[in-house]
Image 1 (cartoon, rainbow, N blue to C red):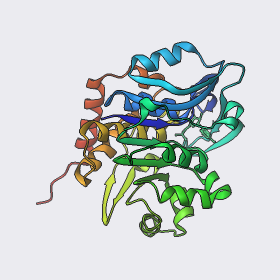
Image 2 (cartoon, protein in one colour):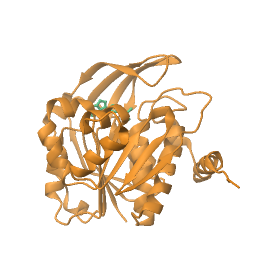
Image 3 (cartoon, rainbow, N blue to C red):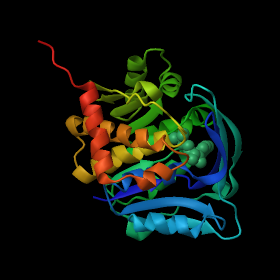
Length: 305
Ligand code: AMP
């Protein structure tokens, strides 16, 4: 099965209680592609970068089966740049800088070779850009997931509601779910969001795991209690990439498989946070992923007699 991913490919500057980096590779599309490529290839990447984006990063992704035909390179432009500083709890962060650069002119064009993708991940971008991607797909994909953030709820709520009608699953964190659903209860908020279009909602709760709402069923996934979280950047995109990559590999979007996909996404995210940027994602093997998934199974396994 093939997977189409739309998201940023960027430079990030990060500060965590454990250190500081000035300019490393980041972007929602980058994290998602690294995570998903463990499960499914080819991946059809859609993004925009400047002439400053390193060729070796593009080549490394290509070697992982990530097609770059849909990644526009603006030779004399600068790539999207984002800078953030994490608080001591690592759950909250301040955005210090957002330089859109070439992202300001992003008008995604879906190449013919990308048509027919069965699975689609719409990374966190302006809702009208997400919509433009879907409008160009000649055949309705089997499963579309949407990532978004509070910023778009504040400035583009109508556009976001339009895209919500076109997708199968929305992925947000707990505060965003409360904002969009308008209820303090995550269950009530999820139900309200489902009524806006997507039959599934995933609510990420950081170090407290994730909830999957699938029609009228609910699955609660734990988060692995990690001794050290080094850099949480990209954990959400990595979760999304692992989740949809796994679903695309087994080509089944039933509740049972989606529960497993949530665990796989959580396992990928738990690796992501171990080092700065996507570094750790580039190192891990299939055996590492299996072992981490097993840790989750053990963690949540119990019997009541
Ligand atoms: P996450 O930690 O999962 O929220 O994702 C962080 C990644 O998202 C970073 O690598 C950034 O480059 C990228 N990013 C940050 N802000 C935005 C934005 N406004 N639009 C698109 N991508 C962003």
